[in-house]
Amino acid sequence: MRIDLHTHSTVSDGTDSPAELVAAAARAGLDVVALTDHDTTAGWEPAIEALPSGLRLIPGAELSCVSVDTDGRYVSVHLLAYLFDPTSPAIVSEQLRLRGERRARLRSMAVRMADDGLPIDPDEVMGLLGPDAPAGRPHLAQALMRAGVVASVDEAFAGYLGNGRGYYLPRQDTPVEAAIDMIADAGGVTVLAHPFASSRGPTVTPRVIEALAARGLAGLEVDHPNHDVRTRAELRELAGGLDLLQTGSSDYHGTNKTIALGQETTDPEMLEALIARSSGATAAVDGAA
Image (cartoon, rainbow, N blue to C red; front, side, top):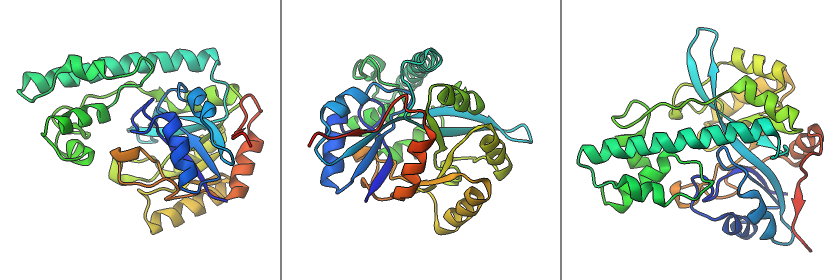
């Protein structure tokens, strides 16, 4: 059984629509795929409607959070949330706040680029977003590609949009402890995404993960394209000592990243344990026979 628990569609910053994503997952030979768009569940319904026979969908989301280390350092973290009730008032309110802030941030970054003479039209960038799409830096990266300024999303982040680059603006993300509580209250399960992916920026420490496990965090995304062999071994040992689930995922974004669906996978026993830890507020969905 092949299981990929971290993918993105056009509802956030992927290039496949939800329907295209589940079709691509079936073609890739996956048995289970989780849709985890950033800070939104708007892709769940179209993915379920298009779900091919033989494919199981795990409804989820990737939540943008912030953690405070024991030394007072703020660290950006991403929290994968699965099988939660998307109508939970706390979650709806927080996702609405995040989407509004993301749009304001994206426009501000686009305006700064235009003011500096880059061929970016802020109105065009914002007009291409869907009504429920969480606006993010990949949308600006795509605009830079269309304008011929860069050849890839990675080049856009390296030169213009990455942390510490000239056009980066900070976000006001959800405290990770609050996000774990919100998802638990909504019947869901949380897994820390790519926790030691140092190529993305500063990462949390093992002591922080220990505290999050005590708070209710259910698992760690161990097998991820941004984790090398040594990092995976370290995370397996940490997860084992804290009785945390260990997942594997591609973090697929379509053509925005050179990563294939099913490039990393989750053990079936881990998936069953994850489902068992949810309250059933939202269930996995099987494609019609």
